[in-house]
Length: 489
Image (cartoon, rainbow, N blue to C red):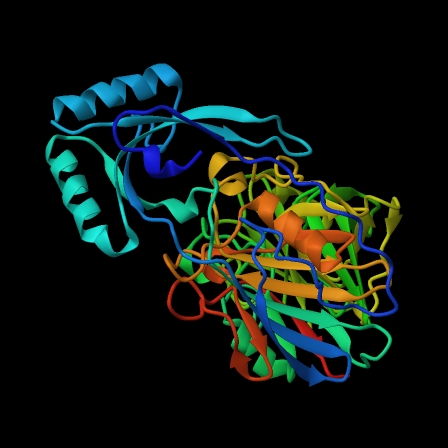
C-alpha cells in the first residue's frame, strides 16, 4: 500500500518480508549477475565495470528512481519514533490538539534468524515531495512550538516500500587469477581513528573498505579501538565479542565465521588469571593487556607489570605511562592489581596464553604472521541462505533491522571468491541505503554463500587505488577503527 495515503488520518499496515532468491550455481569465476536488481521493484541496473588489476574488478552500479518524499514523525515519550498502540494514540490526540492532522501507521519489523517480528506504531503528520522539504520543516517547527518532540523524516529511510534509488560499488576478486593477499589494518595505532584512504596508502593496498565497529562510548583519544576481534599479522589486538561474526583472512583466502577469544596470564608460580581485555579502557577489578600497538598510555589508578618479548617482568610501575616498543603491559586495578603485586614480581616470567577459537569448527586459529581478522557486525547469509543474526550480534533494534542506512558488506562464494560492496545511503533523492534484509538479499544476488555486514553509516568507505569511490553520508571520509585491505602481494 502506498505511503502517499499517510495524510488524512488513515491507518497504514506495512511489512517487509524476506524474498526467496534462487541459489546461485557454482561458477568457475565470480561474475556480476545478469538478473534484475533485487531491491525495490527489481529495476534493471546500470553498471560500469573497471578492471582494477589481475583478478579484481570494480562495478559501479546504479538502480531505481526517486519517488519518496518527506513527512514529520512525532516522537514518543521514550524518545523513540515508534511505540505501542495506546502510546501512539495519545500522540495522535496531542497533534490534533495542536491543530494538525495525524496519521497512525502500523509497522511490522520482520523477523530475523534469532529475533521474532515486532509490531509497533508510528505517528506521522503530512506528506511532501522531495523538493518541498521546507514545508515539512515548517510543520515540524509548529509542532515543536506546541511542545511536541518531532523530526522530519525522509520516507526512503523507513525500510518500507521504496523505488530507490541505489548507488552501489562492488569489488569482485577472482581466486583463480588474483595473486595478492588480504590483510587487516588498525592504522598507526589501536587507539587512533584513521581513514580507509590513509590505511590503504600506508600499506600500498589496491582496495580497502572500512572494517568493524569501533568504540564511540569511550574517551575521545581511544575511539579507534575495535569492538570485536582484531588480529593483525598474527597478533591479537582486540578481544572478541563472543559469538560475533568476523572474517578470517589468511593469504588470499577469506572465511566468515564466529569467534571467541580466551587470554590467560600464567605466573611463574603457576597461578593463572583471566585477562579481561586487550587494548581498551579498563573497568573496576579488570586485568587488561596493552601491546605496543595501542598508541596511548595505560589507565591511571592501578598497577602496570611491564613484560619483555619473552614475558619476563622487567618492572612494576604506577600506571598511566606509555608502552615502550618491544614490550607489553599487564594493567590491573582493584583485585587485578592485587594479583599483579602477588604474582608478577620483577624478574619473574608471566606467560600470556592466547587463543582465538572458531566457533563453527571448535578449533583454535594458529596465530601466524599471515593471519588477520576483522570483526563484523551482523551475519547476513550462511550456507547460501539468508540468516540474519541481529540479536546475537547485538543489533536487533528497529533502527538497525528495518531502517535503511549506508552499508559495507563482505561475502564469499562457493569457489572462494571475495565480494566487497558498499551501498551508500542517507542521501535523499540520490541513494537510500539498505536494511539488513535488503543487504542480505543483495549479497545473495551477487552470489555470496556467506556474508556479513561490516560497520556502516557514516563509516562506509571503499577506496580503490588511491581513490575513494563511494559517497560517504557525512559528506567526507570518516576516521574509522580498522580496515580490510587487498594487497598486491
